[in-house]
Amino acid sequence: MRTSRRLGGGSSAGYDRAMLAGDSERERAAATLREQYVRGRLTLDELAGRTERVLAARSRADLRRALSGLPVIPDLRELAAQGRAAGHAALHTAALVLFTGAYLIFCLVLILVLGFTLLLHGASTSELVAFLLIWLVPTFFMSRLWYARPAHRRRGA
Image 1: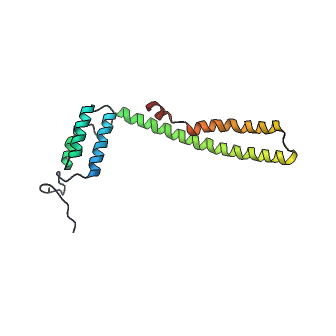
Image 2: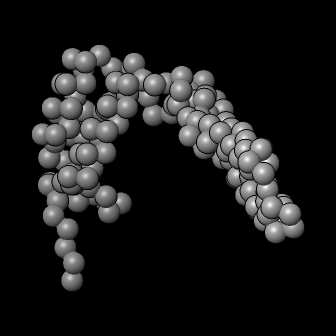
Image 3: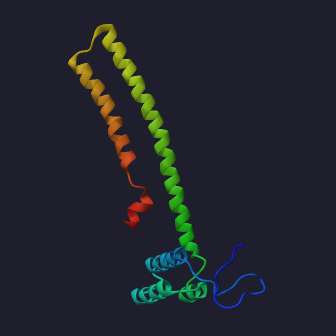
C-alpha cells in the first residue's frame, strides 16, 4: 500500500494544492525564473526575490505563488523567431550532410584518378602539386562549412 505525504486535508478530486514540492520542481521553477529574466520580463531584484521564495518553497502552492504573474504562453514573436532559428539550423544541417557526401565522393574519385595516373605513367611534381591544389580548395571550403556556427547562434552571442 502506497501513501503520499501531504500537508493539510485531501481534496475530493484526489489532488491536494498543498502537496509538498520536490527538489526537481524547485529547480524547474528556478530555471523558469532565469529564463524570464533573460527574456527581460523580470528585473534582477525580482529574480532574486522570486528565486529566494522558490528555493524556500515547501509546497507546490508556494511555488505557484512565486511564479504568479509571469506569462505562461510565450510571445508570438518569440515563437516565430524560434521557428526561424530551427528552420535555419535544419537547413544548415541538410546542407552539411549533402555537401559532405559530395565531398567524400569527390575525394574518392580524385584518389582513383591519382592512383591510375601513378600506375599508368607516373606523375611529375607539377601534376602532384595540381592534385594537391585540386584537393585543398574544396577541403578548405568544407572545413569552413563544418565549423561554421549557425546564423541564429552568431547573432545571439
